[in-house]
Each structure stands twice: as C-alpha cells, then as structure tokens.
Image (cartoon, rainbow, N blue to C red; front, side, top):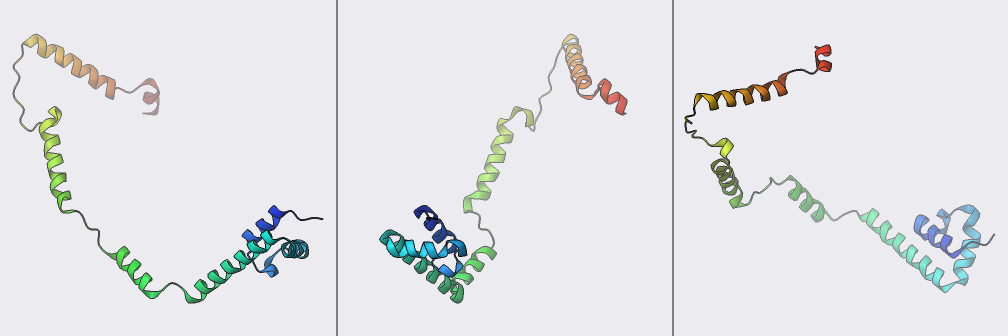
Length: 141
C-alpha cells in the first residue's frame, strides 16, 4: 500500500509530529515517505515544533498577570457612557411628544350625534371582531 502525500499531511495535522501517536498501520510507510521527501520533512519538522510549543504552554500555563487582567475585566461592573442616560431620557420624551397616540393632553372633540353613532359602530365592530369567539373557540369554551 502506497500512502498518499495528502494522507501524510492529514496525519501530521491530526496526530502531530510525534510518530508514536500516528496510526500503527500507516506509521512505517509514512516515516519512510517523510524521510525521502523534503516537503514532507519540512511539514514534519513544523508539526514537531508546534507540538513543542503546545507542550511548553501546557506545562507553564497562562501567566498570572493575564489571568488577573481577564478576571478584573470580567468582574468589573459595566460602564455606561455619560450621555447614555440623558440620551435615553431625551429619546423617550421625543417619542411621547411626537407620537399622536400617546399624547398626554387630550383635547375634547365636539362632534355631531351622527358622527358619534358612526364611531360607536366602528368601535363595536372592531370590538366584536377581536373578542367574539370563532366557532372553533366556542367548542373549546
């Protein structure tokens, strides 16, 4: 069985540069191909170098100063910009002032009886459309 170059790169990516971790059935042939091919030899050296970096990091751990800085940043209370509270209050006030449905002062509207009756019919139609149960809902009730 001839092992492909792409497979050797997969092995190096998955298992690293230590051939003891490589699949047993492919190890001998992969080592022979790595020794014969300068590109694969360079990839193998790079994988071993990366393994050494990971091992050094795992032994030493993260520096204490980094952990302390991260903990301080995470545990610190959130800081709002100075203008945030004022800007929020201004936005709410503007919304209330501009929105005709939420105006605080309602001016009385004088209408004739016919118009009032028409408005009442519209209101009752809207009310019944919203709050009258459908036949399906009637069976549930």
